[in-house]
Length: 558
Figure 1: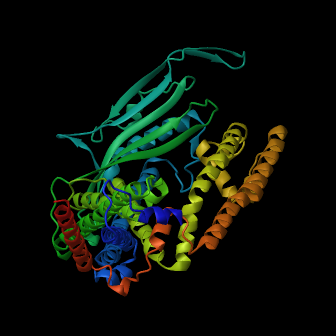
Figure 2: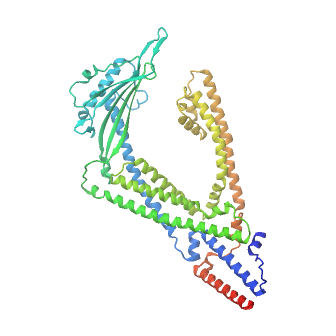
Figure 3: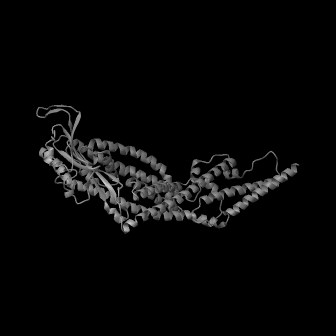
């Protein structure tokens, strides 16, 4: 093998050494090459082999197992807490709809509308009345917002075109596109009735764009006390919109709210629940400590790999006179360690945010859930690294890694076709099909079709109001399903299976220069040749022998 012969070549010097000196230098080079091989081979060993090679305990493996358990417990605990927060928001939104929308029934969100002028005034009057009678109607702990000593008012506004003369019978109109607004503040403890207030508020129906009602309510989520958490204080900004922008005779009524979570100004929790609140904080501190240790160990392994890569590169340059390919260099930088480092960073950040949420310094539940969720996902994915030490599982991992570049290129090409169908479906079918009303819903609908889900309802729900569009929808859906299910998905599966067959045939045979270099070393982990003490003694003997040769050479020259 030419490459191996280059490695062991000894270059000529100006002076011609004796046969003994040449033989000793050759042995020294062999020892140096074997020492580098063992060092690199030890780096790529699994934890059990490293234990047999040098007696090093698999602390990193044990730490990852412990970390998976405690991080999962933390995620489940925070997930239940975050679920209570989301449920509290959603239930309050449903409560507001039942309190402030007249004759509201669950499920009427999309169809709740007004069709008569008298109903518009009745709806506004009903909202104002319910707002002022909040204390008598609500079964929750809702309160009005206070600014100092005064309550914040309910604001009633209407938006309309500045000027306009519209005569549909004559098919004539004159309109000023500028929008004006009129607003009226209603205080909760004010004496006049809702009818008296509306005498000063006239709705311009011909030019009306919308009527908006905004007010703020406050509440406290007490259910968290039972789960060892301090309650949060909520500010609900309620928006009620009577939308008339279409001017079609149907005014849609919508109620939404913006939620702001704040730290309660003064609180006191007594009993067992209050005493155990800070146990969760101690548990989070334990997780942060564990992740810091894991971060340090994995960072040290990455640095060790980079040092070995540089040493191997210098060796190949010095002995063979060639550069190491990037594929071999990347073998030293373990992607699994980088994944664990990223996971530890996200988990530490999420745990700090969780502690601040527990102590009510911050209320960023969504941000914290993203950090903890991604961190836990990466931790579990990192377990696959240890499954790769088993031969059958390793073939699957090698297949995924080898097929990844081809899969990315394939997805880029298929994605262009997919986007073209998305834009076409949105423009043509959007006005006639609910699932094509926006680009987001179009993409979700087409992705479901690729997986064979919701196929019949997609065909069935197409409105037949326009024969040309209906015929186009059939051609559009049939071509999309045929193209992606029968052709593109089949090609995608072919890429994976071909890569798997290739990896299976090459299994056990060294393919890269680095693997060929390491395959020469047949020393088993239990041979004792990987011990650091023996390596150190070997280096000491090499230094002593080199010093003796230099002394003999100086003596002969003298």
